[in-house]
Image 1 (cartoon, rainbow, N blue to C red):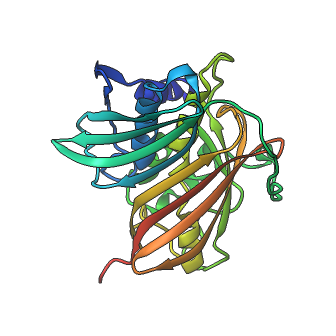
Image 2 (tube, rainbow, N blue to C red):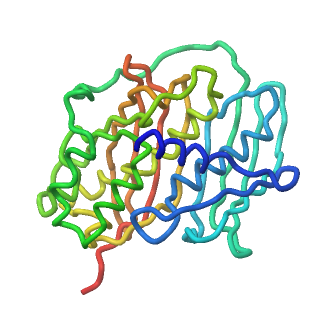
Image 3 (tube, rainbow, N blue to C red):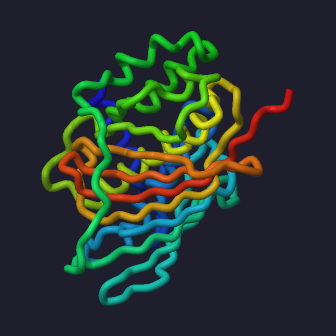
Length: 293
């Protein structure tokens, strides 16, 4: 089943070219009745990458979520070729549904070159093989959700093997703890060795929106949007890609929240390869509101 779900995700990221620099992607619902933000970000990055010469990979993206996406309608991505330089290429992408922009992304791509090297060390984390899979760990908590919600969570994440290092926020609702969380992730299936490195980047972008704001919830003992004790949505999302990696090999997503205020929460994440290389940094701000009684 996981191979089929990975194929579905790869098909979702394989956009249709409908005109020069204009692409169309299909959409699907996630846990909540709107398009998953990671899907839109990954598809927009795919669209941008298809206009970049020489196969140079993305090194950063900055994006804003403008409107909720309709999972029942395709999304049209229009790419503006902002700059083509000798070392750097810049693209801007606008995602449109029903005649209105729902998402905006700017991405920069860089030709390979050598430079100074240093990085923060990888934090301690349990080995992923010692942790239960989502299919093993999460169904026991289905009673915390409305009927069918846990099934939707598992289906939405079916293409990704995502394992929590500690209990997720909905398990410990009502028990505030340090606003830090860790998950290991990889695709649920191997990708061919000759897969375009940009696809690995786009797959990591897809996963990066799944758990980043969990740390905000942990600080306040909130279980999350899926159980209804907060209302949330991504506002903006930024990523920096430092070193090559494979999305079908274990990646540690180390996440924290330095602040929440004004109905917004900030999440910061670092992604490390299994051998300790820092491969990406992520920052996201999202709406985090307590529902009115």
